[in-house]
Length: 96
Image (tube, rainbow, N blue to C red; front, side, top):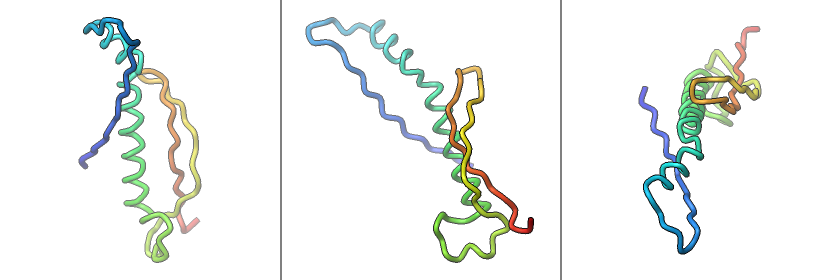
C-alpha cells in the first residue's frame, strides 16, 4: 500500500526582522508537523480501508460488499508525536 499525503506550510515573519535558520526551525517545530503528518497518513489509510471494505461512498451498487459504513468516531490517542485528533470511520458487518 502506497500512501501519499500533501501538506502545505504557511510561515509568517514580521516585516523588517531577520529571518534566520533558528527562527525558521522554531516556527516549523511550533507547527507540530510530525503530529499533522501522522494524522494525515492515518486518515488516508482509514479512507483506503473503508473504500476497500465498503466500496465508494454514495455508490448505488454496493450490494455485493460484506460491510457498510456506520458513521464515524472521534479518537484522541496519545503517541510519541503527541496527542492526535482523529475522526475515523465506523464499519459494520451487513450480516448482523
